[in-house]
Amino acid sequence: MPIDDLYATIGEAPITRLVASFYSQIAADDILGPMYPADDLAGAEQRLRDFLIGRFGGPQHYIEQRGHPRLRMRHAEFHIDKRARDRWIELMTKAVDECAFPAEARETVLDFFRTMATFMINAH
Image (cartoon, rainbow, N blue to C red; front, side, top):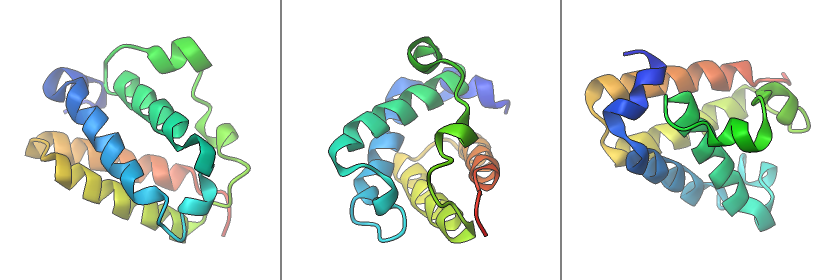
């Protein structure tokens, strides 16, 4: 399934639940928690939700509000190594599983997340 067909397949509500489930794990996480501003977790959650909705083929709210994602640039200040990447994938996989996406959508989403998380590594 192409990544930009996901929105038509799963819709906005499951993406919203996915991001909420992911962020419910962040504050207590010893690796990822310190990377997220405690006073702006809701903002970070909204930005990821808007980004994923657009990337998965839905409305382009993220681009309308923030422009091109420039993911590496926006995350450059954070020390993202393999350990952080692996934890991000672990927590996101748990969130995906909680949302019970259809099997084909699940694999497409997880492939996308693995690729993007690896792309974000900026430290070794």
